[in-house]
Each structure stands twice: as C-alpha cells, then as structure tokens.
Length: 258
Length: 106
Picture 1 (spheres, rainbow over the protein chains, first blue to last red):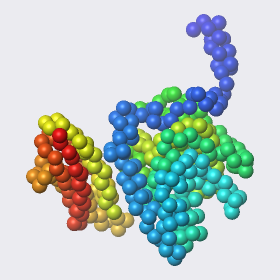
Picture 2 (spheres, rainbow over the protein chains, first blue to last red; picture 1 turned 30 degrees about the vertical axis):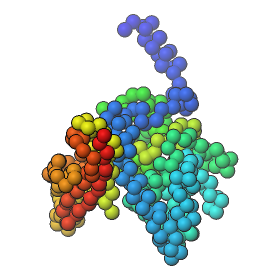
Picture 3 (cartoon, rainbow over the protein chains, first blue to last red; picture 1 turned 90 degrees about the vertical axis):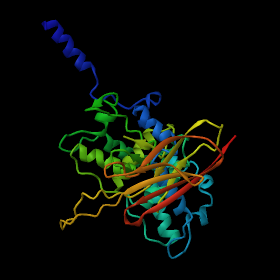
Picture 4 (cartoon, each protein chain N blue to C red; picture 1 turned 45 degrees about the vertical axis):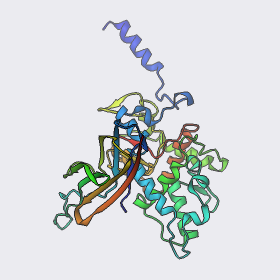
C-alpha cells in the first residue's frame, strides 16, 4: 500500500466513533427479524410454538388456589386476558413498597407472598415461567412502555451504565455487540440488537423456557464475566434499561428464539 | 402436568388432504445422565404416539431417545367423513396423556 493510502486509512479510522451509540427508534429490530423462516413459522403458529405449553400450564396455575389465604390469581384479578392486558409491556415497574423497580417475575412472587401467603417460586422455576409466559402473552402486539415512570430514571441510568460497562475476561460491554455490531455474525449466529420483546422465551438451545435474566446470565458467562445473581438490583436495572431501550417496539411474547 | 396442543382444521371438504399438528409437553430425562454419586438417572421419555379417527388407527409413531423433549408431530390424512380424532401419548413410568379434536366434513 502506498503511503497516501495508508494515511487515508488512518484518518478514516480516526473519523469513526469508538462507540456507534444507541440505535435509532426506526432502526430497532426484534430478535424475531434475525431468525430463520423455520423458527419464525414455529413462533407464529400457536400449536407449534413450544412456549404455548408453558402458557397452558400458566392458565391452570392462574385458577389454582394456593397459600394460607387459599386464593388463586383469578380470585383477585379475574380473567387474565382482561386484567393482565398490556401489563408485561410496562414491566419492570416501580414498586412503592421497596422504592425500587421490580420485574414481572418478582411482581408475581410479591403477590404470592402478600396476597396468597404462599412461598415464592424459585427463579426460573416451571411455575414462575408458566405464569409470566401467560401474563406476557396478554401483551402480544402491544408497544413496550416500560421505563417511562420518572421515579425509575435513576435505575434506567444505572442500567445504561451497566450496558456500556466492559466486564469479564473478554472485556466486552453489552454495547460492543448489541449497539455496535448487531448487523454482524458471531460464528454462524446473528448477533442481534438484544431487544427483549418476547420474554419469557422458548429457546431452542435450552430446549426449554427461560426469562430475560437467564438470557442475560448466559451472555455474561459468554464474555467470561461473573454473572449477576437472579433478582439482584443490578440485574433488574439492566432489564429495565433494555426494556426502555426497546420503547415502542411490539411485544411478541412468548417468543421462540434460537 | 401434561399439556398438549393439537391443531386439526375444524372443517374440511370431502376428499381434501388435511394436516394435523400435535405438540406434547413432557419433562424428558434422556437416560444418559448420572447423579453426583455416579448412578444413572433412569430414562423418562415418551415412547409411543397414536392417532385414531372414529376408533380406527390412522397414524402411529414410536419414539426413541434423542428425538425431542416436547415432541412435535405433524402428519397428513384425507378427510373422508365427520368425526373425532383421538390422540394418545404413552411413555416411561406409566405416562399416559390423551387429547381429542372434532372435524366436520362437508
């Protein structure tokens, strides 16, 4: 290469920003868009989408009485397709009692403890995934609105901080892949933008259901970082930031993902 | 708690070829895993699926390890008359689950 060309290449490199920055609203793409036609067909057909098995289980749990109070979800909330419409699209939401954001799974467990007087479900348990899948399905097709509450501003900011924070032995931040390189591939897989439109998901790699927290922990392990504990405040802040980052995107829960 | 999703068209024209799709939930144990003490965790899978139409068997599948945790089976048949499809899944440890769906042929 001639010296002039080398200089031009160096100047071009300098002109490119280190971080490409946030994705414009018009450029946001759900993980669904990155999937193969086969996986899309599996998600679109409610009798082929394995996540619907979890929803069926959730429907049974919704009307099952539990705890010392001997109450079911439906005793207070009535029909799930009415009372839970759009709820998942605005979670994590601010909880006045703890003065902090809580995600959908934590909200279910708060209800269990306070109103059903029952033991909370363990993170990633079949029951918790079934109930959150059932609730998330009621927001299908609705725009994500989480993070709009002004009381959540500091948590959203904390989540953003974590999103751009390099971590782990590979020294990567979420943003390095999901803001800057989402249009590329990592080995054979699409990197995607990391938009949480469809959680809880049935992930083909897991051969099972999982929450956004499980997915995030998978990413953290992948960059060889110490994964956040389930329900840790930083985990919720990161979930909240991701939902606010996907503001206005359409929910497609419970989704199928590769 | 077994849950099945079955997709049968509710109506069909006589002689039409229809697709039937079934998805069964099952907590699989492949039979190759060991406990911390070194003992094999016993296999627990679905081993057989049968579809009957008005009592007559029209489709059967034998399932083996390494097929799927929640087997999804899709097959075709010809709509000959109105009636009822009955589905049955049989598995290890006495697992039995059933489902049914009706079709109107006109």
